Length: 79
Image 1 (tube, rainbow, N blue to C red):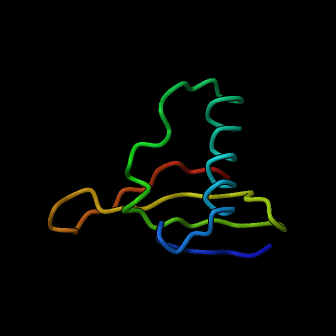
Image 2 (spheres, rainbow, N blue to C red):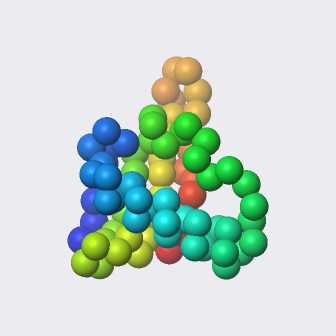
């Protein structure tokens, strides 16, 4: 297992695919939470995730939630 912390632009195509796939499996399929997961916040977030091989097994995103960039919000947590 390996830990990564990347901005959206640093993510590879397969990494963002695996992150979105994992979020859909948990939030939509398992928890039955139906909402549009891709909300444009991903573009400005720091994506922290753990991979086991090619599979993302844990992730979260952190981003500033104020214009002064003094408050950070953590969301889309998958453990």
